[in-house]
Every structure is written in C-alpha cells, then in structure tokens.
Image (cartoon, rainbow over all chains, first blue to last red; front, side):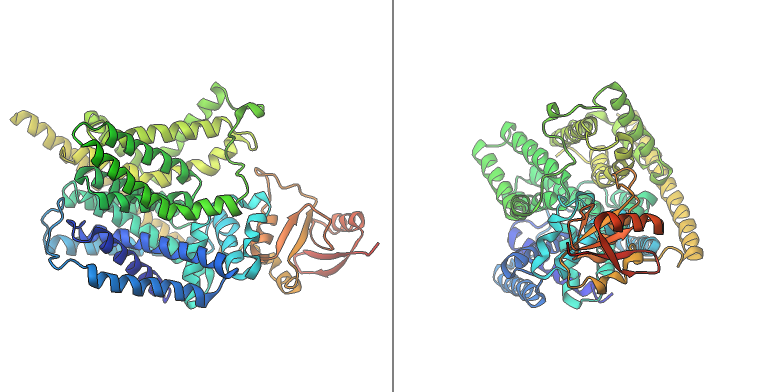
Length: 451
Length: 141
C-alpha cells in the first residue's frame, strides 16, 4: 500500500504538466485532468527511469528518485508562476453537477474498485505474459546492474521485441520503497484498471449527460472480462488507457480547435507505441486521420489547421522519442508481423483463414465474460448509424476499420505460428484493449449533441 | 416532432434499461467469482518457476548459462519450463538449447533422459534439486 505514495508523486507530476500546458486556456474538467494526470505522470516517470538507465548504465535508485523529484519540484515552481490567477473559468464543455450525484458516484465506484482489488488477487503473480515477459524484463532492469540491456538478448520465447513501458513503470514504482516487484506490478494493474474506467466517465461527461457517462463507466469497470484482463499485469491495460485518453483528447481538440489540447493529445499518443507494438499502428492511424481531417475541414483556416497538427506532432515526438530509442538501440526485430509476405509460403492467407479469424472473433465477443457489452455497443451503432459518420466521428470509425484490416492482415500472414493458437492467445486481449475506447465512441456517438 | 421525440425517449429508456440490467448481472457474476476465490485462496499462489528457486544462489556469479531439455519448446506446445526458469533466474541469461556454455541447466522429465543429455554434452551434474532440475558443468576437454 505504501507504493501508492509513488503513484501520488507521478500523479502530481502529471497534474503540474497538464496545468502548465493548459495555462490560462479554458481548462478541462477537474475529473478529466485528474484521470489524465495519473497516466501522464506515470508515463513520464517511467520514461525518466528509462533515460536514467541509459545515462547511469544501470538501475540507480538515487538517480531515479533524484530525477523524478527534481522534475516534480521544477514543475511545482513553474506552476506557481504559470498558475492562472483566475481559475474559476468553467470548461467550455463542462456541465452543471450536484453534490448528491457525486456522492452516489463515489459510493458506486468504491464498490467496483473493491471488487477489482479483490479479484486482482486471483492471480497474484499475474497471467502468463505478466511473469514470462513484463515482470521478467523488470527483473533485468532492476537487478541486472550494468547488464540491464540483456532483456533484449533473451530467447524469442520471452518476446524481447515487446516494448517496455510496463516494466519501466514497475521499475519506477519499485525504486522508491523497494517493497517487492510483484506487489508493484499488481498495484500498477489495479491503478490503470480503475483509471481507465474513471477516465471513460470523465471523458464522456464532457459531451453527454453525466449520469449516462457514470453508467458507462460502471458497466465497463464491472464487466468480468474487463476486470480479468486489466488485472493480469499485462501491458494491454496500459495501451487501453492511453488509447482512450488519446481519443478523448483528440475529440476535445477537434471540438475546441485548441493548440494546447492538441499538444497534450500528442503526449498521450506518443506513449502508445512504448506500451505495445500495436500502439505504433494506432499512433500512425490516429495522427494521420486527424491531420487529414483538419486539413480537409473547410470550416478551419488552413494555417490554423497546420499549426494544430504541428503541436500534435511535437507532443508525439516528446513522448515517442523513448520508443524510437528502444526500437533503434535495444529491441530485436519482431516476429509477430510479416512485413514482406512474398518471402514465405502463407498457410492461412485464404478464405479458410479469413473465416477462421472472423468466426473466432465472433465467438470471443459473445463470450459470457463480456456479458453482452459488445452486443450493446453494436446496438448503439445500429440505432443511430448516421451519428457514426457525423463530423469528427468519421475519423474514429475509419480508425477502427483500418485497425481491423491491419489485424486481419497480421492474422492471415501468420507464418511462424499456428493461426488458431494465435487467435486463442490474442483475440480476447485485443477485444479488451479496444473495449474502453469502443464503449466511449459508441456512447459518445449515440448521445452527444452535434458540435 | 413530438412523436419523434417520444420515439427517441423510448429508445433511450430501452438502452438505459439494458445497461442497468447488464450492470446487475456483472455485479452478480463478480460476487460469485469473489466467493469462489475466497474458498480456493492459497491453492494457486505459488510463484511461477519456484522449481528453479534454489538454483538462483548457485548461479549468482554467472551471466549466461545454457538451458537444455529433451522437450522441444514450440510456441504452441511449450511446457513453460524455459520461461519459468528464465523468469525465476533473471537477470541470469538462459540460452535455450545451446550446450556451448560451461554451465548448463538440465530440465529432463526422467533421470534416464537427464543422463543421456549429460553424456551427449560431456558434463557432470554439480547440483540436483528436489524437483530434478540439474546444474551441470562440462568437462574440460
């Protein structure tokens, strides 16, 4: 539990960064700022830990703490100078609320958080990939001394090409009190599981009625498969969180045309590739589609659009730099994706492979663990199909379509594994990390008013 | 206009009804899971790779050792022994199916198969733990 203080340090780092970025612009709602602060702060602390490993050549507790506390202190001082004198400005998108509503929310969320905390103990050492990949890599980072880079030399069974944001987060959490790595990994999964659910509420409540946003968050956080996959100590929950936060910020940015929110969205987008390799695809599609939408939008001045895109990409570059360093200097090439399908005989690139993949996903999404949440999402789309292609919604609909096509390509060009085995290992996890964003998008498109 | 609004209101109520129903089912399922967890707690709380735990001390001065087994680990059928060993022994690097190292860990299902591996790589066992996991050292040729 004492590890919670470490998350609190990161929360303050994230909070101060967001305050400085937004400065005197109309602020985002407080709940959204808090939900974003935790992810941004943890991401920044993990990235600083990564750079400290490079600079000091090994895990160095004093260095990691020194860098993080210096950053925290610097941000605190900067906030004193930059903190808006008139901070009573209501968000452009914020709605009225009352205390009774928040008390009810608080009680219900507390119950769900307790459920998540109890069920996270189901597998105290996490799922297969948790100990076999992420926690094992964290051991190399922490205990490997000057050989910390050896995690990239491990046999391919332990996936050395997987990005290391989660092991770095656990390394950062471990570094402060050194109370045990497993406890840190378990707490990280609970923090992100809860933050993702609360973020769904905070994001949605900007655009739709708060009580509907609240129902959406409770529905997500109580779904058995969501609880299971978010507490297995996998990096999927990290990707899920950063995807959702990126989409929320991109929509807010597109609605407000605010440069500072574009920069903030860029920071969150840049973390995705460092969480999982799929994050690279998501980053490329989301930033590409948003840029195209801004450039082709006739309501927006072209110079202004280019300026917003510039801010977006500066944000991406700032947090995405760690992934570049990781991919260039550490990670071996991935075996997951076949970049040149002509080099191999493709056993599954046929109608049978296609039907197997589609059939498997259909079965997965109707699995009892999801408790028909996918059916609800489809119903919301069917009842108001026009909303799915309204204004900025077309960006996200296209994003999901392109992402599914990419997934299909990866499955059909499977060369190193058996397709069914691969589907068994990945389908539920992909469904999991897309779920919060798809729930957000379906509720947003069904209930939100035209901007 | 009124009829349209009424239709929308019915639709919204219908969706909200479904959401509340799904939340109620979720909570019930979670309650059952918690009860099941309480009754089975302790049965599944062994750390992966505990079979290799006592090898850690013996290998603390090594940077990389071989990991040999007569079970060929494939992505689909690997028995997890290699991954469990790597997890438990990290940051010592395990080199799968490479007998070129002076020190090798041997994971064999039977003593006979262990003996066979030892004779092939020309090594002697230096430590055997209660789970039959062997640390071997190759003879100097």
